[in-house]
Structure formats: structure tokens, C-alpha cells
Length: 248
Image (tube, rainbow, N blue to C red; front, side, top):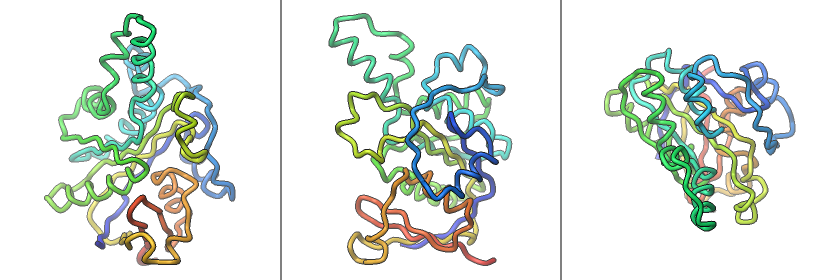
């Protein structure tokens, strides 16, 4: 498989990196660690207060990025999250285990497509949305979904990759680098040949299989994008992905 696309706009946010300048500085840092569990966010200027107070931090960040990029008139939106509303799901399970009453807010906001639905409501834009969960491969699967949408005739696709807080209960089941800071990163994707992407089946390419991800796929892509790297690799569970920047 090989395909190409253009990135026309980007935006990202985390509790420690609030604007584009912060992210540009982050991309130049030789250390790619992103493990802060800071959850303090300034008051949102785009999300109504009554809505913002009900959101999990991952959903809040995804919505912030989505609303910022909605001004570029996307025709569809794709949301990617490995764990979705895991924090809320854990609260529900904990309440059931302790025979306590389940919070109505936790119950209604616990579905995986919470952020996608709220984007169309708060952004007041009726566009098709989809939510993807594909383990650690979510970003690359979202890119394939975006490519399919572009091939179907859509002009601009909004892609948002985000994660919230992973409850400590689950930490022992994850590798250390899989417990990242809450974040959201978004791109407006259009047809073009600015970037090419192809894959080799795992272990078919020594060069790629020797690479390793110490960031979630979406953040790893953003880092290389901001550095304007000509070629970089993103490991997956079954395929290792090769990205190349074409032209000048």
C-alpha cells in the first residue's frame, strides 16, 4: 500500500503545551518523553462553561483542537483514541463494584464517540464523524480512513488523535511509554502529494523494524512534521509505516 496526502493545517494542545510555539519548541527537544500527568487547563474560550465542566480532560482537549480547526470548513471528522473515555468507564465499574449509584454524567459521557458528537453540537456543524479505536495503531488507521474519505470525493478531512488520563489501576497492564500526558493533536488533511506513506509487513524491512516509537503515533507524526523531516518511520503492531516528505 502506498498513498499520498497534504496537511493544510494543524493544531495541538496538552496541559503543558498550550499553543503552537510551545509545540514547535517541544519538537526540537532531543528528549521525546511525554509522560507528565499534569491536568490543569486554563478556562476555555471556545467551549461553553456548562459543557466544559462535564468533559473528561481527553474529551476537553479533543474538542478544543476540533473547534479551532473547524474554521477551515472540514467535510468530515475522524476521532482517534486508544482508550477513549476509560477514566469514566473505570468510575462506573468502581461504583458498581462498591454498590454505589452511577453518576448520570459518567454514564451519558462514557461512550467512545463522545468527543465526535460534541464537536458537531458545540461547533454547530452537521458533518459526518467517525471514531476509531485500534490499539496503538489508531493514528495510522485514522490516516487510512481519511484517505478513503478523500478518495470518495470529500475535499477536507479533520483528523484528531487524543488521549486522556489512564487510571492508575491500568498502569501495570501497559508499557511505560504507553502512559502519556493527556493530549490532542489535529490535522486538516486534503488530497495531494506533499507526504507519501507506505508500509512493509513487520520484519520485512530491517531498517524500519529497528526503529521504535517512544511516543503515541499521532505525536510522533507531529514531531516529524514540525521538524520537516524528509523521511521517518512509525512502528505498528502488524505494519511498519514509512513516511516521506516530497518536494522542497
